[in-house]
Length: 68
Image (cartoon, rainbow, N blue to C red; front, side, top):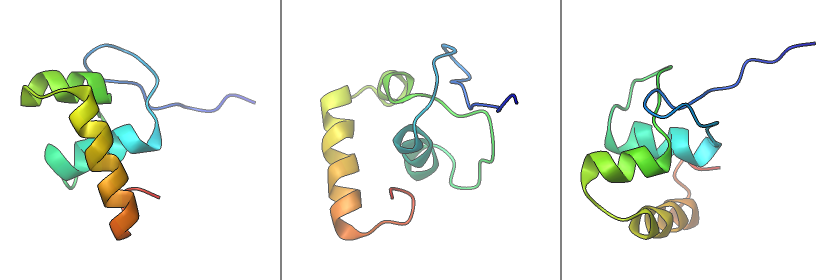
């Protein structure tokens, strides 16, 4: 059986749930496909991946539904 995986629209890497959550939180809340990985999001937002990792942890701790 073949499962479809979300891949980064920009670099082609396989996405995690956190990547999708970040994209929806910072780029487009209503996106349903064509997401970026956190590395490409960091490049787009001109910030570090470490900052995005800290934000993921904060959102998870606060119960944000985009990060389960």
